[in-house]
Figure (cartoon, rainbow, N blue to C red):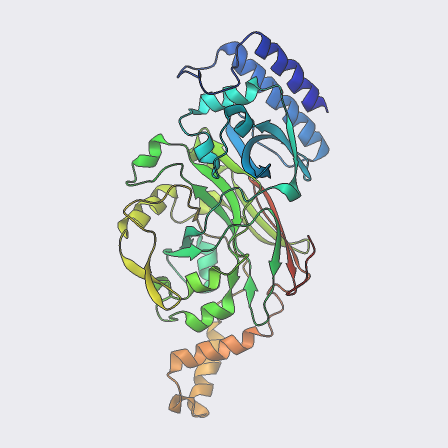
Length: 414
């Protein structure tokens, strides 16, 4: 309430003085005055103070980052700027109504505006919109995305891999309040990841230095059973099996926000990734520990443009179509340690080699596939894989939280 009253008072005063025009039609390329900056900073400071006191999830001030969410109203997609989040409801400014733009993607709604233009637009509005978490749309739409495997050293150690690699992920995004329908036979694993999105196509590593970048939290759910059956265990970084195991319906929920920082390089260093299952923390890491940073990810992605070097549904496919990283596609930047699946230990491999020799396994299978098959059977007894009834919370600092409930087929809880 304090946030709302402060917003009305300051917003009304500034609107009367015509400091903050509420539409983009006459938003020129000029910086805010000292009075404008002071007003916006005061409004954000009040919101942060109230939020911290109540233990509310922290939303960056607009001076540091613009936080956007999407919802549907009257069969139109609305983008609004989040200024307060109490864990159940979001309060902010409906940018779509202010601009008269109802594009599917938030970046398209604010196309043509500078960072300062957007901050000015938010600060100049006297109207506030309140949206329930359950009414939010995915923060980014679409079904064709890029993913980086093994981009945290500790995750590489636990899965037995040593270097990052890339593959496509084909699945529609889901919202932050998320229900995942379980299929019998899955080895359902979780992966908290930082997602990045560009407002326009990136054709060279230098392109994104001059553009805004959006960040969001995602969960890159994986069916390890499909992965183990389809992967090339002697060439993991070839990516075979990864798109198939990660592109099932419900396998890409997004956080409640798309966050656009003013200085993304500083912002990334502050991001902490965390995932818990039924209240127990399983993954805990920092984005600054990525093996490939954002520049490297873009550089390596562009280096394979046009090449059919990934596998999906039995066919060779490209990492992305065309010569540029597509606008509004999510790049999943990898997950820290703590996933359910672990590589077989050296002692286990030794036992399986011995078994392969002394039981005559070599008559029916080569040694390496034999070990993989035996380990696959062992995973049916792994209690860590997700199952119906499990509750997963996936979060990244300042990017919000995804709440996933795993349910049996045909059971709806939302």
